[in-house]
Amino acid sequence: MQRLAAYWRNGFDWRAQERRLNNLPHFMATIDGQDVHFVHARGEGATPAPLILTHGWPGSFLEFEAILPLLTHPSRFGGDAADAFDVVIPSLPGFGFSPAPMRAGTSPRRIAGLWVELMRGLGYERFHAQGGDIGAGVSVWAARLFPDAVVGLYLNYIPGSYQPPRAPSEPPLSLEEEAFLREATEWSKSEGAYAHLHATRPQSLAYGLADSPIGLAAWLTEKYRAWSDCDGNLEKVFDKDHLLTTLSLYWFSGAPGGAIRIYKEGALDPLVFAPGERITPPLNVALFPRELPMPPRSWVERAFDVQRWTVMPAGGHFAAAEQPQALAEDIRAAMRPLREVWSKTPDSTP
Image 1 (cartoon, helix red, strand yellow):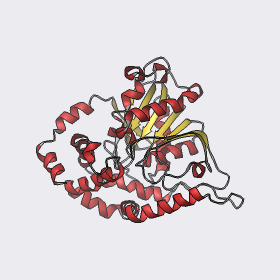
Image 2: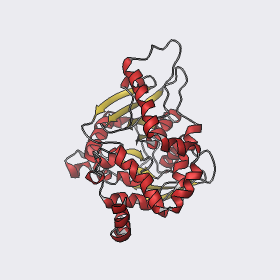
Image 3: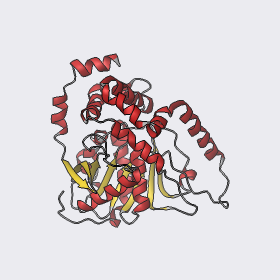
Image 4: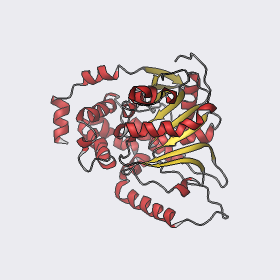
């Protein structure tokens, strides 16, 4: 932290990062009273498929910077132009350039509705959805509430609040499922204090995070170190400029507590399924080795139609930033069979 703080004060060039970020196609929209920042990049070729990418905490839209051109212009990187996407990357309310919600109830469930309206406003009546962390929850809620809009799901994390339907007639838990539930419980005991605090007392923590840049840096950076595939050496995966650009987005927003409040809103509306309930859009899952506890496929299939289950050789919780090439290739392969299902309005503009 001393080295990072010294570089933030004496070596980090925010203006250089600002110029780089300004090369991205940024937009703002107002949806149901909520201002939403998003990046909207058009794909190559005649029929790029629409895809929305959603980040989590302690991330931002910056997570997808490296993967963006791989998805929009695959032919530049040895891929096929026919696999291109029109990509939309919104900032969650309270994160980065999306201001914090001014009313209670802005949970992943409500955000899913905002995203569907955003995509419709851009001319995409049907689209693919990808996410990890909180972004996975938003994507699942979108598929659950708007199955006619979501063509396919691609997740690199299964939301922690996910509880599959459990009717009396359901088969008993498998040994693998029991092992996962034990692992998740133990992980929560040893690593989950942050989430419990976010979900129960976000405002108390918010004062400290808004008052101290070092406090904010420590609170976020510890998770990058613990959750990435870095073997304890954070700069093996993320250089200091990337970390400090993300930290700056949180700090310059003036209200980093707005980002953690989403945990409280999500806890009030968890992803619990009723007996017999299922998600109809097909699901594709990528398992990265240093991800947080992930359930076995059988646990997920209790509520989802799992089409693809890919075990990745390297990477952690911040998959799009850690392994952009591998993730992009798997997204393209997973969505390829679904491309003929979607439709969009030609020549739509933000």
